[in-house]
Image (cartoon, rainbow, N blue to C red; front, side, top):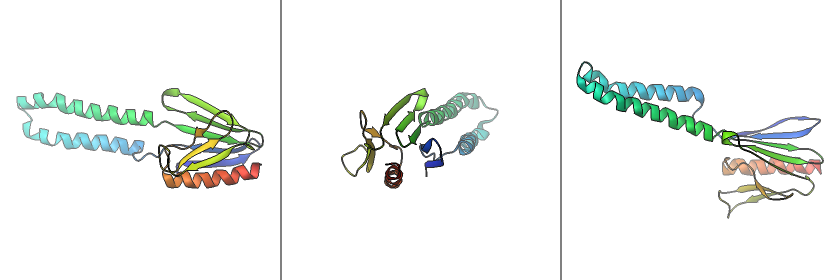
Length: 161
């Protein structure tokens, strides 16, 4: 699952959430290399002719665009949500792409976990209610993962009250 509870410490419980990556970095290299090799196969028939020099720039641009698009996807997916739960404070820090950072904190006694089955932007929309505003948790998780996280978080929150 793309979330894990870190071992409990004197500071409290800590949860890390991150988006699922269907194409890891190693697979990225293989995919771009394989695409370049497959694009090069038709070029074998035009080696030594002026047609090669007419096609080569466009094929190189296609590979460069593929590389750029996948790199952009990786940068946009660099999200980490860090939830720290202590007896007196619950803190959620969201580290977003391109260095953005947002924080939310509240007293865990007053925090309520809301799992909206309908009406949210995604099915089983998970929010934390309490403190100054309601915040979303794990928007990038699947509906099943959000349900499991809601159960886990409810149990951990109940032990802290």
